[in-house]
Amino acid sequence: MDSIPEHIVWEILSRMKKTNDRNAVSLVCKRLFYLDNAQRECIKVGCGMDPADEALTCLCIRFQNLSKVEITYSGWMSKLGKQLDDKGLLILAKHCPLLTDLSLSYCTFITDVGLRYLASSSKLSSLRLNFTPRITGCGILSLVVGCKNLSRLHLIRCLNVSSVEWLEYLGKLGTLEDLSIKNCRAIGEGDLIKLGLGWNKLRRLQFEVDANYRYMKVYDRLSVDRWQKQHVPCENMLELSLVNCIISPGRGLACVLTKCKNLQRIHLDMCVGVRDFDIICLSERSSDLQSVSFRVPSDFSLPSLVNNPLRLTDESLKALAQNCSKLESVRISFSDGEFPSSSSFTLNGILCLINKCPVRQLALDHVYSFNDVGMEALCAAEYLETLELVRCQEISDEGLQLVSQFPRLCILRLSKCLGISDDGLKPLIGSFKLDFLAIEDCPQISERGVQGAAKSVSFRQDLSWMY
Image 1: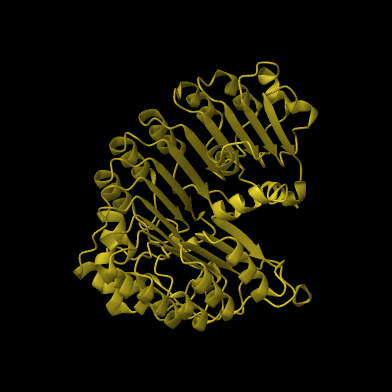
Image 2 (image 1 turned 90 degrees about the vertical axis):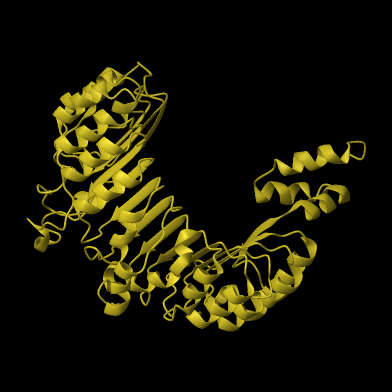
């Protein structure tokens, strides 16, 4: 080992990605131990640290070039020892001068005081907080004031973050590129306007409202109205994901949908109030769109939306087909419900999208309008490589047998489909057309029936969903 040049040993270590492998190699000899210490840039710790402060201090001193630290206490119980608290963040700020990326999950003992300690980490550019219930908006504000290079901020289930002065400060700072706010009950749609000119820098936005507390946040009407009066520059937005949002026509997040010019990926999940007009405007402005994902309410999950103009129809799909020539990934699903949706997307709209766009990935969930006729139409889908069908109950064995005629299909996933059986897979047996076939919870398909249907097969059967 001593005769091997250092740059070769360094390269060998850099190719070892698993922590267990690196830990094992570092025990072989002192040379590997010290080289690993110098090269290690990221660690993931949590319940195994006891006592927490002393253990974290030792790790920080040993690995002096740490730039990414993940601390998670998922599954923690008191018998596993005391959690890391504010002092732990002081240790990171003191001993990790190169820290750029920090993730804290289920750290229930960390408060605003800890974030103030962290504010001295001037190189910190990415922060992810997942269920840190003692942290408030004041703590986040103190951190963003100190960390002026922050470009990525993810807040997940931060239940006590109510004040959003930090969002206004980040907007003025103009460094934020990736913002994710999920299930933070006290942050609503109207609060996002406070990002101001920071919208121009933003490239990725994920905003998810807790469905159980959808109406808990009382909108500030003045704040929502400001969306109309204030220019929201979204020219650099590449990815937009909205979940469980209530979108007012011409206000709030509807303004974002109609002003994005370079959007590449959009995901709308149970967003009430989105109109065809919004998607048509989006398709006309963001012609480089590559991926769309829509999950819409079924007719009976939200009865008030039946025959309501505030819902998406085939007009949206036709606009995407006409204007977005680079669209490669399409996912359409309806919310769980006993009854299918008949007043939203239909087979004609879906096929229009497939016929006019180079769609490589197609996923349909609970789309009862997609049947054997749709499968027959896919025989002409010259770009389709991946097909996923979930709870598409109108597809029979006759339609499934057509898969062998799909020009480029190599990956097929079937889940919870009641109308298909082993007979539908027979044309695929021994053909090795598919690289991968996954069958999950389809009651009429057996494990024996999938053997030889693809180069690689995954089979799982759990029928509890039927009862």
